[in-house]
Length: 195
Image 1 (cartoon, rainbow, N blue to C red):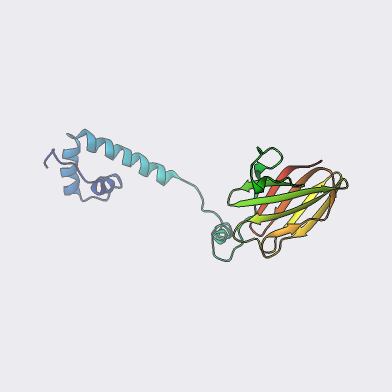
Image 2 (cartoon, rainbow, N blue to C red):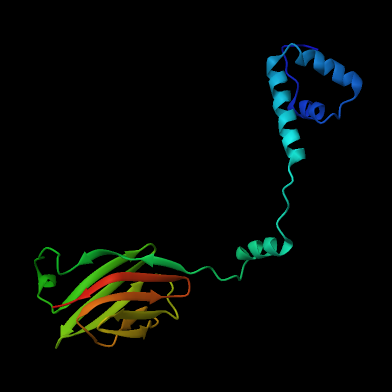
C-alpha cells in the first residue's frame, strides 16, 4: 500500500467496528503502522464507537416526543409572549417645535416601542381624572383588550378594527397598562398619570 495516501474514513470505521476481511485488514494495518494520521484517526474512532456502545441512555417516552412535535405543528397556538414596552417619545419632555404643529395642546402624547409593535398614547387630564386614548400600531390586533390598573383605580377597553381604544376615566396616579392580544401581551409597567 502507498504510504503517501491515507485510508478513507469509511475503511477506518469498518476496521474499528471489526467489519473488514482479513486480507484487507492486513494491508490496511501495514499502512496504519507507518502513518500517524491514519493511526490517530483509528484510535479516535475506536474510542467513539466504544463510548457509543456503552451508552445506556433511553429514548424519551412516546407521549413526550408527540407533545414536543405538536408544539411546532400547524394549527397549534403559539405561546403568549410578554413584552415590556420602552418609552421612545414623551411630548412633556420633547423640545419645543415651531410652526402649526407646535400649538399648545392639552393632551400629552407618549409613544412606546415593543418589538414589532408600537403603542401611541394620548393622555388628557380633566378635573383630577385622566382620559387615556391610544392605538396599537401593528399588523393584527383583532380581539385585543387594554387594561389599566393601579392603587387609585382600574379600567379596560377593547381594541376596535383600527386597533384604537379609549379607556374610561381613571384618577391621577401610577398605573400598569397592559395590551392583551392573541399572540402577545405588551406591558407598560410605570405609567404615571399626573398634572
